[in-house]
Every structure is written in C-alpha cells, then in structure tokens.
Amino acid sequence: MDFSQKVKDLSRRSRHASQHALTEEATKTAVIFPLIQTFGFDVFNLDEVVPEFIADVGLKKGEKVDFALKIDGKVSVLIEAKPISMSLGTAQYSQLYRYFAVMEAKLAVLTNGREIWFFSDVDEPNKMDKKPFFKFDLQSYEESEVADLARFQKEQFSIETILEAA
Image (cartoon, rainbow, N blue to C red; front, top):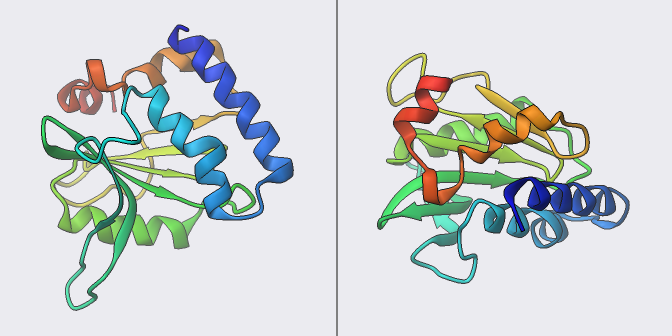
C-alpha cells in the first residue's frame, strides 16, 4: 500500500474513532498506533517506539510523553496524544512544550487522532515554537498536503529538510 492509501486508511480510522473512541487510550489504539506505523515505525519495537517515555521536567519527576520515536537509537520525535473528542489548544501545547525543552528531539507532534500538529524550534533554538509549522487534519485534507505529511516518514526523515520547509 502506498503512502497516500495509508493516509486514506487513517482518515477512515479517524472518522470511526470520532464516533466510538471515548478515551485517550482508545484513540491511541484506533488511530495513533496506525499513524506511527504509517510513518514507518514498528510500534512493537522498543528500539523505535517508546511509549510513556520519561521526560522529567525540572523538579517534576515522572513526567511522561506518550511516545518517543527513535531513529538510529536517538529520540527524534516526541508525540503527545489526546482523546479524539478533545480539541487541541493551549493546555495540550503547554504539556508538550515542557517535554520538548528537556529532550534532544527537534520535532514534536501533538495529536488527537484527527488533527496532527507538528512543532519544532525554528523561531528560537531549543525552545518549541508557539505555533505548529504544519497541521494535518485526517478528516479534511487536500491531496497536496499528503506529500508534506510524507516528509515525516522514518525512511526519508531528515530534520534539516523538515526545518527548511518549516
């Protein structure tokens, strides 16, 4: 299945989850795990996908980002998941912002299984930008946006290329 077809499948999953997923865990199972797989990561390989990755922030211990994606053994992407019924906004952003500040990853993703917001530190090094540089809505997108989404696949992942485009 090519990438475009995988995104169409994710779109169907997202629509279904909008009606049936009542919790964050249900959203993760129905949409976010398949999303991570679509990007080419093995969700069952802890060398690639680490759930509940510890991201201690200052004096707050036990802080965990939902997923850390590793490429060549290095944490490259942080993913914070929310229930599909929750709108993404400042509160969810703040949590991811704290994690980003203490991690080596240069790409952070906030998603509720419908919207996928991509952040980096384009405005100021080592400080997550306030606004996502790319947003993708699984339930309402243009085919041209699928090519932009494809840049985040593990096999062609290049933070330099992604940040240039941002």
